[in-house]
Image (tube, rainbow, N blue to C red; front, side):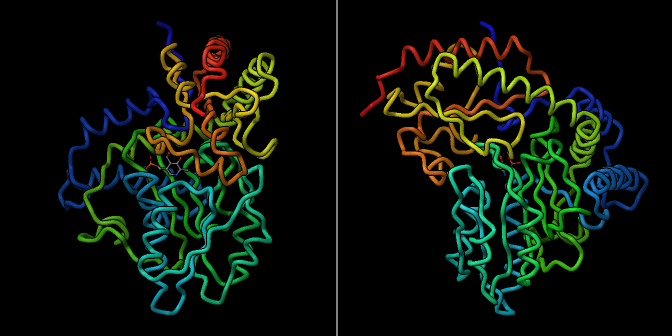
Length: 388
Ligand SMILES: Cc1ncc(COP(=O)(O)O)c(C=O)c1O
């Protein structure tokens, strides 16, 4: 059976050059980067080169970047690390948006249980946070604002430059989860003054299990993984040097390919949308019409027109070899309607009847045509059969 992978927002395949870089590191650089002997020094050199290259791509100093196990750890650490450092001074208020990834929302909820006051900002129908709602949420106790750069489910890109400015005007730090946008959108911290940034390698053709966190100089932050002086005392534990080398390689490829990837994927996404609309004119496209990631297409089948069960959609596509998702990768598998789509005002049954296609570097026109045909068949069979 033909297979088509259209779930690049969940994860991307590892680029061959990245595999080569990691293989070389696994084979030739076996030391522990903390050891003082030659093996250790070699590992340390490769680690620091990887850090430098990441820092260069972000426009920050190498001392401001440390490696983590991925986006989830970076998000958790950002929120907990700042609040741990500020609570003693009476700064115990956290602002997050309702469309954040669960790695932010669950960390905020945990902090709330520990006495932090949490404000959750709403979004409009396009998934955008408004500057006015942020201004209204501040108090003299606000320590941190956390708003993601681009949303993983619908692709909406938030005005993080403006949000950072507002946070700073009110004496708060600003964190952004750039897991989905890094390597896809321009992201230069000389222009966007975010204080903390979460990143991961596996969304940009790097390996799973490594991410990074930027903490700009002067930002209040207390390490959340302790027990060693690694990563400039910010994250204890033996560093995974081969994965760091793979991450750096993936970032350097992305910096060359980014524009070409964006142009190609945007054209393919428009082709897919046109094909779906031709058969199903009443579908709703989720996310901001223009300010969104170029590779994500999230469409909902309104309940009143189609009465489709979302699960049947995804299962039907899977049976035809097409990998797509109905919500974020981290929540698929549970039956809850997406918190992002609900926050954007979709009704629950329509939110469930949603397919997110996320295109990648190797996606072709043939893939798109095949996926559109598969969707047409699946919808034809599932239409009107949703559980009422
Ligand atoms: C926006 C966003 N933040 C955080 C994460 C978690 O990253 P990781 O899988 O590296 O833990 C994801 C993964 O889907 C994501 O899309």
